[in-house]
Amino acid sequence: MDEHGGDGSYGENGNYGESGGGVTELTAARRAAKECGASPCFLAAAVAYTVNAVLYVLTNLGGSPGPGVWPFAEDYHALFRGVHIVTTLMSVVQLAVLALTGAGMWIFFVDCKKAGVPSVRGLKAARAGVLISLVLGVAGCLVSAGICIWVLSGTGYAGRNVLWETLTDLFLLAALLVFYYVKALKCEGVVRGICQTGWPKKKLPTSLAVMNFILAGLTLFGLLELPAWEDPGVLYLAEQISQAVSGICAGICILTLRGRLLAGV
Image 1 (cartoon, rainbow, N blue to C red):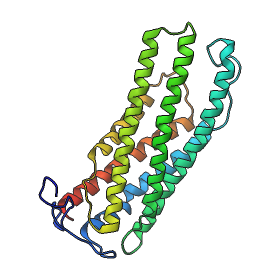
Image 2 (image 1 turned 60 degrees about the horizontal axis):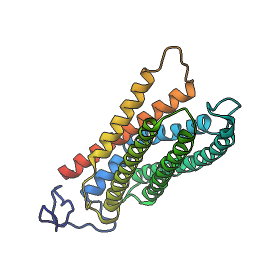
Image 3 (image 1 turned 45 degrees about the vertical axis):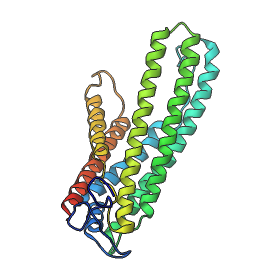
Image 4 (image 1 turned 90 degrees about the vertical axis):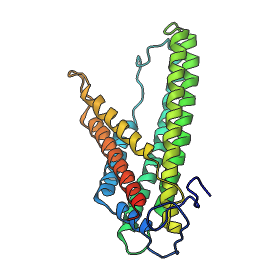
């Protein structure tokens, strides 16, 4: 029982209460999830996500720091070359995550275009990608924090205030990453529950859609704020724009599905 007096799921009219759904029954909730998953907006999100993954390969993998790149003493060159190796490996893992999540989106889209109840195989693939992203993001923040403590405390380039400000920023970033990916997992769980049981057990989180819109807005605003003399390159611009488009379209899909579930149509 929940605060609405039901079992925490939507009924056939979209309200909370007792409800059921057969394994192959195309309930109102399943129909809503199916149509949203097969919508042009979700297709645009999948296409933009795929484009972003391809551009990620072209802009983030390969290359090595040359002499003089790091503004620290010679003693730290070996450290940062080691860091470069680690970050390159993390980039390869991130590429695998992008491929896994993107494949999950395409599988779900194709399944939603077919007749009958959508399969959850695509959702499970996307969930695995989100889980790895969560671990990778937090690990990256911890590694960055360790490097900051080591380097900033051992050089004359920063005082204690700068060190604590840097660590605070990394902590906030890690907290935001955890919040975002937890909401993404919750969203996936709600949709997967619809496909498996016919009705959602929880409401879709609007906070995930809002964060997608905010991040997309910050990304686009950041591109507009680039200095006129700075040329980031076409690939970088395309990567950032495709990332923003994917987030916006995904956010629209979440809000659309949530609205239909609440309306029971």
